[in-house]
Image (cartoon, rainbow, N blue to C red; front, side):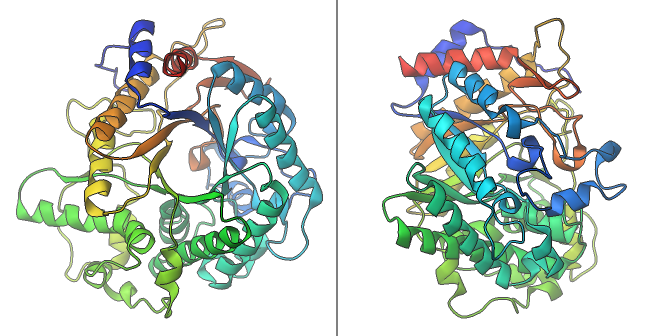
Length: 471
């Protein structure tokens, strides 16, 4: 990892940053079910595509799985106590579909729902607002056996599941996110095969992207009918696409990248259309045979808020390719690491740090989509090589990252973007998907052998930011 070149904010600047945040600005932390819960065969939970994928040799670094993860299923009270001491306003959690409905359809598992009821009650008892994500990639394996998100019927199954969770938690939960990062579920899961279920098929990537958004819209409609006073949104991972030069070829390549990583999701959700130039870029995979009359009215169901996950920018350089460009090449290119510049500060994930990128992205959304709903940054964080020294984890690079990005959000709000809150990824070190446990994003260090939780320097810094904002 390249050493950080940014001065590390101290406690005084943390307080100053807190005071810069807009009145009522929400500060929280986020996690995901498969990454922290463990207990994969307890309480009636069925297998998910990530159980299958992680147990397939060669799919996850060092053969690691989420079988135990952070053991949050048994230790959730301890983790809520950490949030209480941190002082967060809200906690973004996700519900594991196979824990609630093991087959993805039909019978409901009451023990699975009871776990989330206990968790939500614990949060509320300590004054922490739950923001519940219904799908963070852990599709029940029986649905994948029937085609998964390639199967249009999965969209309706998802809407049914959403209503089941709402029936159980809706008296205590008023804000819901349908999907987390459908780009990753579709492109990485069904296009490049880097994530579960490990399918490599360009057309499947595009059809699953559509079916995911269709499921989002169906779920919003069903849930809003049951509770019109609750708030509903979706979380998209987006990147500001910038050419590395003003050469026409690089500018054109950046336009294609913006379409594939951003507009394939933002246009159907925020405009009710697909981009006009989609066929040009997608080639043979762009016949849109999966699109039916009325679908785009469903995908563009009105939102109460938009969740945005941001980690790094897309720097784009044109490369030689055949004409017309093979669609899989275009999809697969998106799975590559972004281009690096000589002076980049680079995270343990190999991602360049560009705090102003979050401002540019928010401004792009604001200008591109008039009437943009209020935005929450639902994930932002940095992987560091965190090594405890006694009872101290000095993760100064993470502190610098969070400080810079929060200041970028403040700059965006000053430019007119309606951003209501910011959630650090993540509360805990956890199972980082195909990278296994070697990549640590948490404000709290987890010793996976003992499950000991140890707040890092960034935890204490964030507490100062929250306290200053609150006062």
